[in-house]
Amino acid sequence: MIRKAFDNRGTTLYVQIWEKRIRVTDIGSGKIFDESPLLAVQKKGRGEKGRREVVVAAGNRASSLPAADTRVINPFSHPRSLLADFAAGEKLLQYIFRKLLGDKLLGPSPLVVLQPMEKTQGGLTDVEVRAFRELALGAGARESLVYQGPELTRHTFDLQRVRKHSGAEAPQKTGSLAQWLLLLTWILLIVAMAVFGR
Image (tube, rainbow, N blue to C red):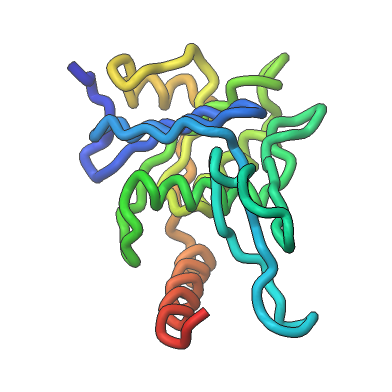
């Protein structure tokens, strides 16, 4: 039985990150994404100024795309730290969250528990904890916790224990005016892309 696994306000995602693997478990449904943490981006548009990078694949599929105008990024590959490219990491988590929760315009905002699985010798610094929290919030989490404790499974996941081991007195939540404006801008951009084509 899943003991107090998720909070009563919605979906809880447990994100485990290694340099060469990312595993995201939807605690409620049991759905799992477990693949390489790769993101393939491709330049789209006309002319030099009009070209922008668009995510074309993520996970294991990203490494098998043709190389023309495609760049494959591992946001968690760096010799000293687990977080190397914040923007790419955020896009990768957004992709995974949409894959697990459905690609709806106004999909659920999950509570995200993020656990770095390596490069944590001596514990995470406050800067690393903040960066991982912000990463999850930027990817669409309504609340994020960085968990530093024994590895969990869907069946041993206990949110109260996670909060205790998260190292945060109060979990970081979305809700500031700037975050809501950023979300609204993001939604408007998606709608504009859908209406006016790519």
